[in-house]
Amino acid sequence: MAGARRATLRAQINDPGRPAVLLTIDSLTKTYPGAPHPVLDGIDLALDAGETLALTGESGSGKSTLLHLAGALDGFDGGEITIAGTRLSGLDDRGRAHLRRDVVALVFQQFNLMPALTVDQNLAFHARLAGRADPGWIGTIRARLGLDGLGGRHPEALSGGQQQRVAIGRALAMRPRLLLADEPTGNLDEDTGAQVLDLMLALVAETGAALFLVTHSDAIARRLDRRVHLRAGRLS
Image (cartoon, rainbow, N blue to C red; front, side, top):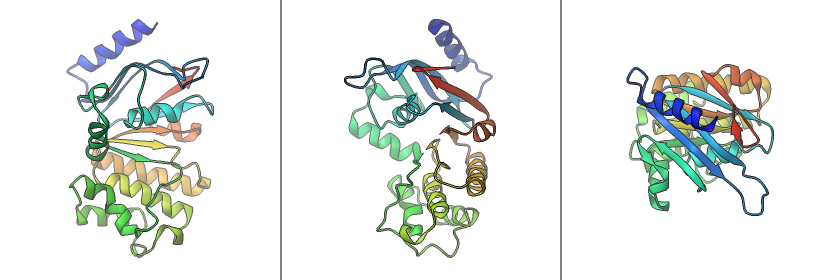
């Protein structure tokens, strides 16, 4: 079965009629020290530019681990991850940091905003690191996310929904090619979560980024182009 999946994956990647493949995960394995079984056991996946993909699974199934590996935040034991033609196994810490700065953006469930920075400064932070800070684009994102009038506030003065909007805006401000989101609406009420997802999908579509999103919600997963489920270290 694993061999068949890899053959299908390679056929998809080599098909000239398909959009450009942005993220490729091939035979990926990851085991934590002391664990009796691998948390990821031969993962194969391809994500096209402009495509949105939901990753579902039970708590503790390794969803966040897979997302973090795809974001070059951690090392893996075997297999390969390729992002925009760059193999992660060939990168050192500095190379992975450059990839995260220039190609990949992440949205975490806990927001991870810079508390000492204002909304406007947080929005521009990643884009400035990437050398792509565009005041016009950042202003557009701020308006679309309903953050006009809040640019001078610090995160502690914002609601949870507003902080998550800032986190999404910060990720999109640098125009990433790959957006990774780990339960981006997990801390929000249903109505606010739906609004945030609407805005994220609209802005991702406008920028042409690929979206890889971890969620427990079937309703959210159904709104994305494609869905995969992680169970016992394998995708289905």
